[in-house]
Length: 393
Ligand SMILES: Cc1cc2nc3c(=O)[nH]c(=O)nc-3n(C[C@H](O)[C@H](O)[C@H](O)COP(=O)(O)OP(=O)(O)OC[C@H]3O[C@@H](n4cnc5c(N)ncnc54)[C@H](O)[C@@H]3O)c2cc1C
Image (cartoon, rainbow, N blue to C red; front, side, top):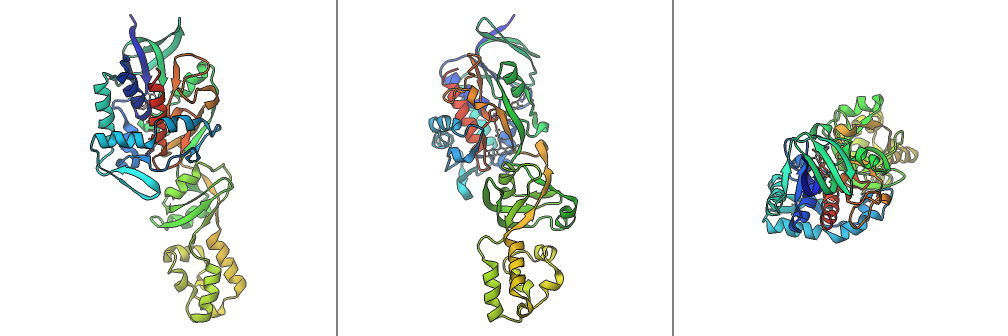
């Protein structure tokens, strides 16, 4: 015998819980199913355990999608200020970091507990450890067969996220359901993810593991100024994660290691005033010594400025302002924060997130082809898209 519900949501994390809260508040009978043994695992692991839950400055420019306009409606209907107001209602202490990023002072648990408490007030039933076996439509209702119960629902919301961090329960479930109901899915790739390096680069850079440098990292499509971090596996740090979402396999990145200094001019000036000073001494004022020693020729570094030609200064400048690095690959979904691509936005309502092909079917959060930058943008998309669906399901 099917259990009859108004709204069945698959995925008990950021977007699914937000949708459930809103639908529950409207008096809808809502059940949320998740195959994980805990709700909101990604919320708990986010922002290094402090959840970067939104950003002070949100616009469509912070998102990647084949339809760059799609996210505008949801982001303007449920904004960062709405979410911040909710966080304040719960007296959750938070702080702002660089680039407008808002983090919990204490723990990401505060955000998850807030959402679970809102769900409880709204009468939402969350059922964990539940495998979804089949979904089909029968006479305008969805029949959902699961390992726990079979349900008949008026609306089904797919909030099952993307493919990143399979260890945390990520699956391609949402994409498969989308295809089954006639949707196209843009090819997916790992985003906000560290790079692995070609063997030659890996050999010398691994030695420098732990060094962080503020840089501008660019490719043809975008440019980010933040730290890069050298690791024993390759390149990481916020600037690298950001550009990874814009990177195409085989492409070379250009890294300006000295964004605030024109090193060629500086070296020419110092040649006049500190002619006997070694090149390495000047460079060490701007970059970590170990990094310079590994990047540039040792003999050159030990030369006094007076013996170095202006042509050589030009070459050094190019090496430091346009350091070229060709990643081997990314670390993939294993460590990626997000999944690029997903359910084609052109086939969904930007106001409600409802499928254009199957009335009563909705897609929210990361499963949709909307991917945010690093900085709280992905959660804001989850809150906004979940909220919009929650108004109508
Ligand atoms: C390490 C890490 C740190 C991050 N930090 C931040 C941050 O600080 N700020 C930020 O904005 N973003 C961050 N993100 C991204 C953010 O977590 C996601 O964009 C966001 O969680 C997406 O929400 P969602 O509800 O769409 O999907 P998810 O949070 O991925 O939730 C999907 C849910 O669906 C369930 N599910 C999946 N498949 C099935 C299935 N077959 N059957 C049943 N249930 C299923 C999963 O168990 C999960 O509970 C981070 C991501 C990672 C991996």
